[in-house]
Length: 115
Image (cartoon, rainbow, N blue to C red; front, top):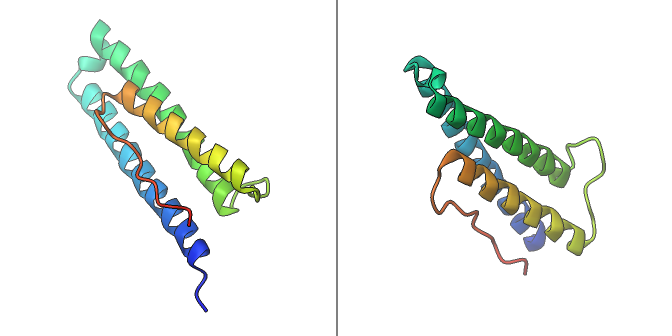
């Protein structure tokens, strides 16, 4: 017998992990570009750099929440469906805020049906 609900949960986590990895890579490349081009040391570049660093902090929080959902964190993963959905809502909010700070347009996380 196949656990479809468990497979959906794993697939959902994998989607969020992939999006996190993509955003972390983009963030790093943008910061490196600002630094290497010398733009980071201009007033506009400094403002962009600070926004990118704040976005990176949000992405680190996303990573912590994904570890929590996967059971890899320090605290036990949530078990109640309502609490799990709250964590995913927080993930979506953090990713949206990070996207706004990084200048990404329309990057939303796809959701899989729960059932």
